Length: 581
Ligand code: SF4
Image 1: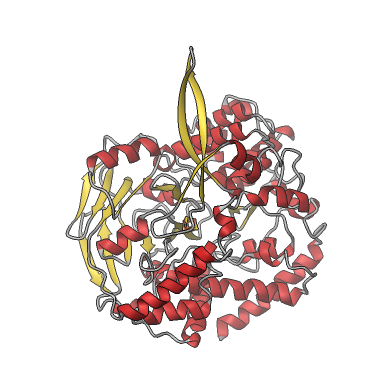
Image 2: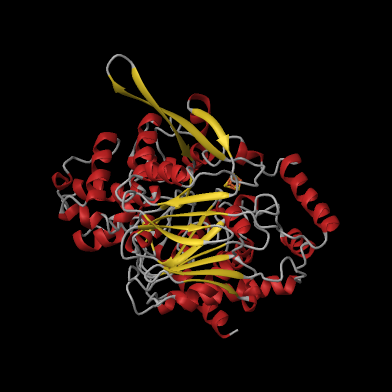
């Protein structure tokens, strides 16, 4: 076994300050990551209480391979989402997994509400709640800078923090992790804010014992070789996911102006190719990743007369260029970078922000809302208006702003316009309008994310798929990803960590799992997530898809609502079988 104490959970009650380091070998059957977080969330969560109730837990977990194999860099957060009221799950890279590994914890569980603003300090020897009154109100970047000064040291450490959006409980606030990585989806930032938790500092210097160094070296070297010496990961390092912008536009699958179209006339201007040529400053990597897919662009802004400029590094990827670019009709790279800078400072999820603003723009056009309440007009392509609207939403300046802070689904429920509110299962959608599997995958996926089951990728198979192939494909992929995410690998490296490789990597550190163990784990997590969602009131029988997804032709042509209803029916049949299996 890698470590006899695995699994070790740090349980912190933010209300009383009580701290417990718990050995939980009973949870080894979940491996770690998503499996471990699902088990701990099930144990701690209160389905009868509001997502922002003090009792609700935040679970953050890593996996047994974290840090000791290449590209195993993710930490998994699970919580009850304040955005859609059900299963909140978000993954972040950076240095957090490394810091948790060296601090000696496989999972953190935080619950309770601090009596005043605090940040949590964790190292290998001590756990402290420290006062954060002076940090409260700071934007995410400034708070990070001050925390770095307050807690000197380098190396195996990670700094998480929220910005004003989290403090003010904007339901799609994120948690900033280092500078360029985030727990972005489903509102973890608001959960931090509800607990008066401004941030977490974690570091460590534990030994990591490897039982069979020779075998470990062999497996490690082979994985590393496949990452750096084959072309499997080249596309992520080269243009990165922004390469999708132009490709999806050409396929008619790039959501544009609130999905009024799948093609954007400004796609070339905001493409990965254009960013690489004009704006790319450098590429960076999560700790322990030899790929380096994080693309950083230079944002240069004039702040005074006589040629006074500031510069900022802004990370960009496909989802960001879609949500604060094509979806808002913005064809200016500089404009997108300014919006990205603003949401990063405020601590907002870019996808949810873009989807909410796109809905508001169309709702204003149709006379459903009056954007003078935001202190600005909104029109597609107008960066200045969107910047003002973001500030108004975070500051809750009006009734409209406060409704928009609850998310696009809640705002559309209040003002009307649900047919063009681009959320599935209450989670604003990612930047692919590829076909049936994409819509179905996000609608029935555990966290309503495109990465739950890769429906957008299933749509891109060369031939038309049958209903059975779509439904079975979505379910099988989600079960497989549940197992993979229990290792907390970066999903970009999923083709490197195929089943035999994942099992060999586990075996080399003393976890001799079989293929059947692996399959069983993926299925068990799937079932347990379904049970969690249903305990929060989610019904797979009562699902709604906004009409816009059927009105605007996808990559596969116009989607037929009747066929989609058949797919859902079939999905529910399969789910019933899974429940009783
Ligand atoms: S591929 Fe990118 S996101 Fe994934 S671990 Fe490497 S740098 Fe981080």
